[in-house]
Length: 150
Length: 150
DNA sequence: TAATTCTTGACTAATTTACTCGGGAACATA
DNA sequence: TATGTTCCCGAGTAAATTAGTCAAGAATTA
Ligand code: FES
Ligand code: FES
Image 1: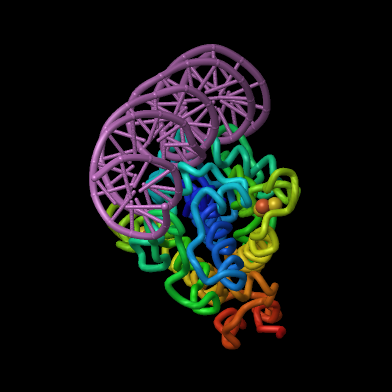
Image 2: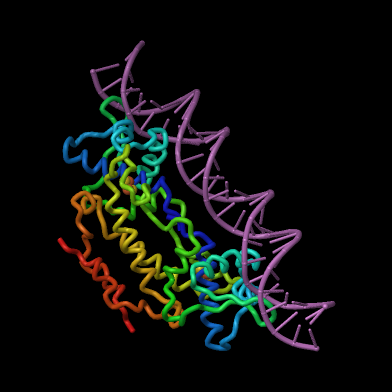
């Protein structure tokens, strides 16, 4: 599993866009986001490109162009953003294939699957809006899966 | 945040030791663990060295030597193992300093703190024994922190 | 003494990260 | 239509990191 600065920049930049959107409903330039959030503009280009291709952002060129969220800020989950830009958010060593001990499932496999589920549940339970308003999550059933069963 | 093969090998190898310990209460050789779990022995040396320095394993040299857990297998949490061998399990970009936007706290900081808490809570709620017996966690209160507060 | 097993540190190839750079395409405005 | 603006795309790269290997040495047992 990798959570790199690319993913972190992506979340920060998306939060910035979400905040701008309540102020003015137009597009926000890469250079403005980059300046405000202290992110290299040329790197942010790559990141926004991926977010656009994932359908999370909408872009417009030319003067008054820039980016905006495709959805409302309470509909965009942090998990979507991260998986759009990160190469590998899977904790299994086998990419889910169950083959990492000489072609068979290793003894830690099921644990990594559970770990993945926990991380994904967390990341998909929080919207940009939740993070901006400092709410702890938007899905009530989150956490149920963790309560001991045996 | 990085979860590399080093951490994954560490968990797998610790699980192996835990399983051996119920069979024979002596020491288990690196080469045996390496063979069973398909881990390069010379790499596993480094890993076990760190686990020993962290107090998780106990070592003995010479014939009949090897490694064993310092505690019972239900007292060793996966989180301990991972933090002993991984360089960086922190998701914040500022290493908790709150300085990554030109010296000030970035807008994602609190979110990454929450993410860290979630991951740590998960990893520290599961013992080697839980994983071996496929239990879902040993701490009942786990999950409470995730239930939406507002 | 000889064989066994851990201990330590140095070393390295391959991969990945975190960027930069440059040219091009679409768009708005005058 | 000319001009400036902004995104679009791909190539390139230095530095860091990972995933190991290797060899000499120390402790232990028989
Ligand atoms: S992690 Fe899937 S088989 Fe090992
Ligand atoms: S993650 Fe801590 S300030 Fe940005």
